[in-house]
Amino acid sequence: MKFEKKSLKFLEKYLNTSSPTGYEHEGQKIWMDYIRPYVDKVEVDHYGTCYGIINPEAEFKVVIEAHADEISWYVNYITDDGLIYVIRNGGSDQTIAPSKVVHIHGEKGIVKGVFGWPAIHTRSNQNEPTPKIENIFIDCGATSKQEVEDMGIYVGCMITYPDEFFEMNDRYFVCRALDNRIGGFMIAEVARLLKENKKTIPFGLYITNSVQEEVGLYGADMIADTIKPNIAIVTDVTHDTTTPMIEKKKEGDQKCGAGPVVFFAPSVHHTIRELIIQTAKSKNIPFQRAAASRATGTDTDAFAHSNGGVPSALISLPLRYMHTTVEMVAKEDVGNVIQLIYETILEIKPEMKLKYH
Image 1 (cartoon, one colour):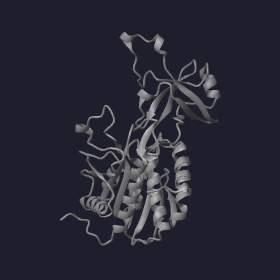
Image 2 (cartoon, helix red, strand yellow; image 1 turned 90 degrees about the vertical axis):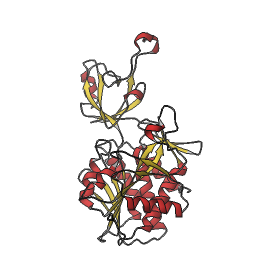
Image 3 (tube, one colour; image 1 turned 30 degrees about the vertical axis):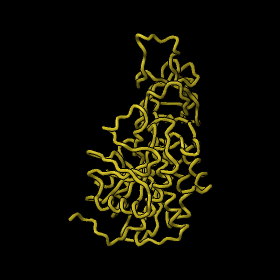
Image 4 (cartoon, one colour; image 1 turned 135 degrees about the horizontal axis):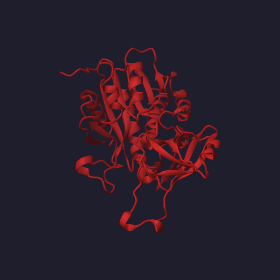
């Protein structure tokens, strides 16, 4: 699938905009502006989950969903000499923090800082320190707590990484927060294709970009109760397990470039999953399979367990280096996930049998 110039321009702007959990609004504005021409209606809930609707009057409702938030840090404690200690907002990895530049979202705007770390010359091989929440700290160039506060930085301020989008070897998209704003991009592209290809669908389609997934699937939990869908197809990222130090016996065998990953899990509905697989086969879209034990750990679980049970399925995008600032996905896989969701939507019929035999 070849990406439109306007699509790539949107993707770059969207990824480069900080959207940490609980503060997704700036990214959501960009997302809503992009999908508005392709849907009949755009809505936002109280916590910032956005959704565009095609055929809003239809009784039968289908959701395609991704989550909009990225991991980040909170200012937790400011020392008397102006250093900042943090707590996680989502699954932020303390081991990659040392020497990273950060943006502190203060009351007066963004302040730059750095995660400091003692020089290698000063560290003993016998007692090599490892980055922990208790010992990583941010230096914003201040010499006192008062000076930090004068910059507009207080406990509770959000901290994000500024690493921006780029393409690598014409094969990969690379950026922080591909988990999972790349999902928001993919479902938006499905809406664009439906509009530009003049496709009509016999149900209401809710293109949904949920908040607060990284801290507990909360946005999906809320919006599932609002929309009350009949079917939900969720897209998120999953691990490329071909990179070093990942155990395939534990994490499965998925890799970038081999296609979308269709999940098998208790919360995944057999009928919807098989529709996705059969669609992939009939349209010659490559795909991979993966299994999840108790839960998928994605918004699929929130939708599946809502409203007395919503038939749900998960299509994942293989990703390298999850929860780092250099997350990587194959451009080919991104195109194939878009195509698979798009073709599956065209196969859904309100009269299809969803109950198990």
